[in-house]
Amino acid sequence: MEFARANGITLHFRQDGAGDGMPLVFLHSLGCDLRIWDGVAARLTPHYRIVRIDSRGHGLSDCPRAPYTVEDFAEDVNALLDRLSTERVVLIGISIGGQAAMQTALMFPERVGALVLCDTAAKIATAEYWDERISNLRMRGMAAMAETIMSRWFAPSFAERHPAAVRGYYNLLTRTPLEGYIGSCAALGSADLGAAVGEIAVPTLVLCGAEDAATPPDLGRELANSLPNAHFDTIADAGHTICVEQPEATAAAIAEFMKAQTL
Image (cartoon, rainbow, N blue to C red; front, side, top):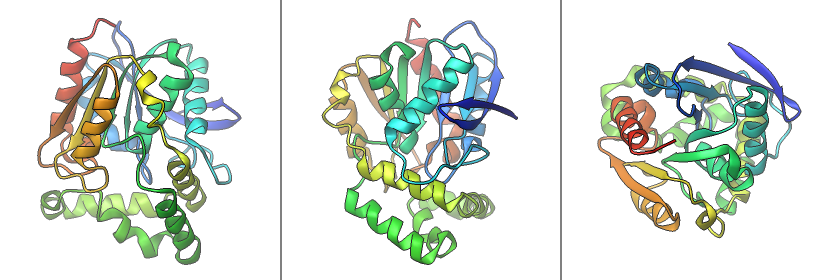
């Protein structure tokens, strides 16, 4: 475990692998932590230096009071990379992590050499949707809503094949600090990158689970079409968490994308 003081909070992160090229920096989704990238990281560490970060309000990082903004997440990433003396990276984010990656590229373009955006969109649901979720969480708590939240995480076939894993991710979700989860919901409610993503010129791979019900493939395709230098692809037999459901295919897509870059 490694920790650093960055942007006024303590962030937990993990570094693995080696390599002379640009490091790969992974950002996780809502209600999870850096461990959701375990299967992908294990397949990429022989060739790349990998940094995985617990975002604010999640994992072993600090949990400031809600609300958060997507700009907060971008500033956290930038400050941590300063502490690590890492000048330029490939940012790989899923769901809210994808939005944080895009915002980092917009705010700190010199820091980002390429992007991999998984199961995300310029705008995820509506402000009203997230306000309602926040209100329900404040009234009922995480455990009362966890099954409803998780119903959009995995493809049905994954849940059937891996019931123990689904239970493990239920535990991960329900043990996420409520304030951190609500703060991140507020960030999703206020984030709308649609008018800005056209400014992101770096090479970008947009990936989406073919059975993603939270950010469906049409949203991913729309995002890719809004970016000047992007390619879109789907991951078969996966829902909203391709790094968990199909880590081998996700890692292969990232490796293929990286081979095509001169970074």
